[in-house]
Structures are given as structure tokens and as C-alpha cells.
Amino acid sequence: MEKLTDLTQLNLEKTEQKPRVIAIANQKGGVGKTTTTINLATAMAAVKKRVLIFDLDPQGNASTGLGIQRQNRRVNAYHILIGEAPIREAIIPTLIPGLDIIPAGVDLSGAEIEMVDLPRREFRLRDALASGDLSHYDYVLIDCPPSLGLLTLNGLVGTHAVMVPLQCEFFALEGISHLVRTIERVKKALNPELEIQGIVLTMFDKRNNLSDMVASDVRGHFGDIVYKTVIPRNVRVSEAPSHGKPVIVYDMKCPGSEAYLHLAGEVLRRERDLAA
Ligand SMILES: Nc1ncnc2c1ncn2[C@@H]1O[C@H](COP(=O)(O)OP(=O)(O)OP(=O)(O)O)[C@@H](O)[C@H]1O
Ligand SMILES: [Mg+2]
Image 1: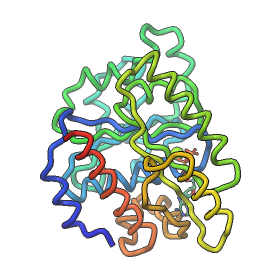
Image 2 (image 1 turned 90 degrees about the vertical axis):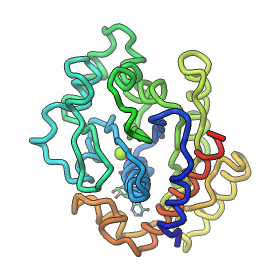
Image 3 (image 1 turned 135 degrees about the horizontal axis):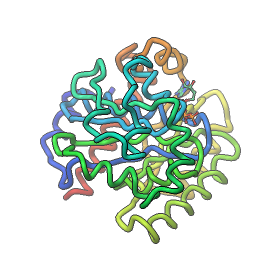
Image 4 (image 1 turned 60 degrees about the vertical axis):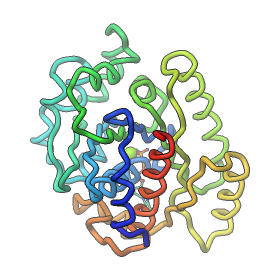
């Protein structure tokens, strides 16, 4: 298991830009975006990184999965994107020391339509992140919704890097090719510094040959940007959100938690190498 002390070593290295923004995106639903966002953020916070999650999904699963009650979401991602409130007013602490969140509210689905008529509609999130003083955070992780609409576009324009969770199933490669083309278009037209931090294989089922086939296809196609760590399908991971806790807190020793701690080690190492 990736030891917290090993991860802590990585904390000694400072990244250049603070905060560094990573969007977790895949237009396909249910591939593990939110689970990855919550647990990566928790693992980073466990090694003393200061982390802010931006819940960009109207479903609000990251907010619920971190135990944020509806009544605490009065100022939320919607108000930030529309420009009705400064970003600091939407930030609330989670039960994890060092991890804060900007929650989603039900009104966020309306933002997708309302933003169409607002100035700099693709840059609303980027501008909001730049306007608040967030320099005490090391990382902002953006949990994107399962679409390539204006919300996700704001996520891709407002970030330095994208992490793509990919479920080990039959159509995985086709879906991701579409996403990669979108990322390239956004990079060309709207966000020249955009890069792919990595692709993480999720819900890997070792009893299923298809999981192996998909994993080797994806590695063959994308090479080293695919993380070595694979997240296994693990019932503890799916139970944790109903307790309002990251699985790393709910059951630190289960295979899903071990995998997410490993993943955090890989991500932080990549970050260190990129900053070097
Ligand atoms: N490794 C895993 N093992 C078992 N269940 C998992 C695992 N990862 C995620 N799940 C479950 O699968 C479902 C989808 O995961 P998650 O919500 O993270 O995906 P998502 O991509 O954010 O979905 P959406 O596109 O709807 O936002 C959830 O019920 C989650 O608890
Ligand atoms: Mg989600």
C-alpha cells in the first residue's frame, strides 16, 4: 500500500503555479469522475496539501458524497458562474482537514442555459477562479458533469490539466477519442496550456476478461499517460457516498482506498515532474 509517509515526501516539492487546477472529466456518465475527485482530493489533503473541490455537476454528487447538507449550499457553484457572489462566499469546509468545497446546488442546471447570454461564457469559471484569492490552495479539483455542454467547457477552459477516468468496458475507447478531440479543440481555441494529466482506469473487474482487454487496448493506444494504478471494482467504494464520506475515510484498508492512495502518489509525482 502507498504509505502516507511516502506521499508526504512529495509534499516537500512545491509546484510552480498555485493553485494548480485539475478537471476530472468524461462526458460518459457513471465512469467514476466524482469518486475519483473526492478520493484524490482526500488523499492529497491527507498529505497536507490544501485542496478545494469545485462541484461543477448539477447532480451535486461530490457535495453529497462529502456530507454537505442542502441547507449549506445556499451560495453555490451557480452563483459563482453567474457572477452573483464572490467565490470565497461559496467555499465551505468538509470533514477532512485541508479539504474545502464549492458545492453544487439544483439551480446549477439553469446556469448552463443562463450563461449562454453572458459575456465570456466559456471563461466564467476561469475568471471566477482568478478573481478570488485562492493562492493558499495547492490544488483545485473540478468535478465535471457527464456531458460536453457549457459547464464542462467552462471546466476545460478553467483548468491547467484534465484527468480522465475511464471505465473498463466495451465502448471505452470510442468515448475517449471524442473527449480527446474536444480537449484538443479547447486547447487550440480557448486554453493553450491545457494538457492531459492522465487517464485512470476505473471499476476494473479482475474476474472479467473484458476488463483486461480494455485496459491493454487503452494502454496500447495512449501509452504512458495511462496511470499504472488501476481502480478495482469494490463494494466499499460504492457504499461510502451514502455515509457522506470518501472511501479513504470510510474504510482506509479496502482495495478501493489502497488504489486511490496509490493513484494520488502517481498524480503528485507527475505534478512534481511537470513543475521541474
Ligand atoms: N471502484 C468502484 N467500485 C465500485 N463502485 C464504484 C467504483 N467507482 C465508482 N463506483 C460507483 O459507481 C457509480 C458511478 O460513480 P461516480 O458517481 O463516481 O461516476 P461519475 O462519472 O461521477 O458519474 P456521473 O457521470 O453521473 O457524474 C457510483 O454509484 C459509485 O459509487
Ligand atoms: Mg459525477
